[in-house]
Length: 293
Ligand SMILES: Cc1cc2nc3c(=O)[nH]c(=O)nc-3n(C[C@H](O)[C@H](O)[C@H](O)COP(=O)(O)OP(=O)(O)OC[C@H]3O[C@@H](n4cnc5c(N)ncnc54)[C@H](O)[C@@H]3O)c2cc1C
Image (cartoon, rainbow, N blue to C red; front, side, top):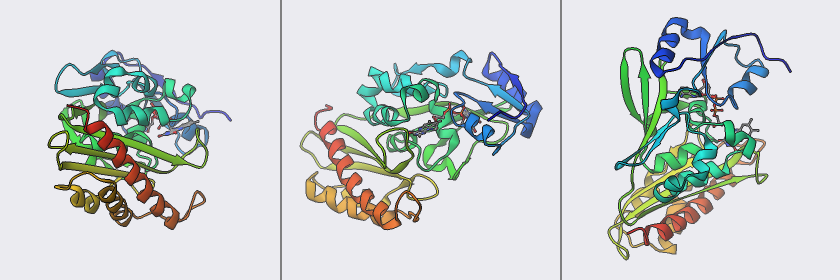
């Protein structure tokens, strides 16, 4: 299958890339790892006249965890996320999400920004970023803005990114002491498959044996975008962590989602799996939280 014709541009800086986007307008598309875009182009779902490659822009490939805010360049690869000790120490669920994505070949090219940019409700990276309260930095020739990932996704394939903007960085605060997170994805096959359901959970305790003072649960594949589970989160806050409360939260989360029947599974099955994965990811989050002093 041949690709449609296009002009290829490789700017050296973010400023140059922003300028190109402004000049070329809707005829241009950004390309990072190309693992999603190239497939769509081969299938003639999109045929941009210009591709602006950003994977060679040095500042977009950096990870900076020296501060209380962890900054991940949009072109940091999923393979690097999966291997990073710093990410494993500070944002362990994100590393788990990266390890679940595709195959080594795909992970070597795929970027964190590209995974978010696709806005697929089944994508592996957004749930773990959202449970850490991550934000996206969007840059254009005229300025920069920061958008919480909670407000970033608009629908399947749709995001807050405007035609003249580049997602340059993801920012997440280092979790407080006694906080932890977990991520589990379920597919029909173990790898190289679109997820059937994926869930990430985060809990922060007020001490090693304390109550839950903050909780976030994010579910994928069960709505047009990744969804928070507000009634499950509310139910957890102020409670002592236990299997029983995690099971209750799982049942509440399954009421918070809106899956559809499709060839991967029925809506009822997906709801049942949200219940199970929420309970299990809360268990993982708690296991990490109690030792992260
Ligand atoms: C065989 C195979 C298996 C896969 N398995 C999985 C999987 O298990 N889980 C999963 O989540 N995904 C999977 N994917 C999808 C894909 O690999 C990922 O979504 C990947 O992270 C996309 O990143 P990329 O850098 O390749 O994006 P690209 O293909 O380069 O770009 C994707 C989209 O995002 C836009 N974009 C990219 N970077 C930016 C930016 N910085 N600013 C603004 N817009 C941007 C592009 O214009 C494009 O619209 C798979 C793909 C393949 C081919």
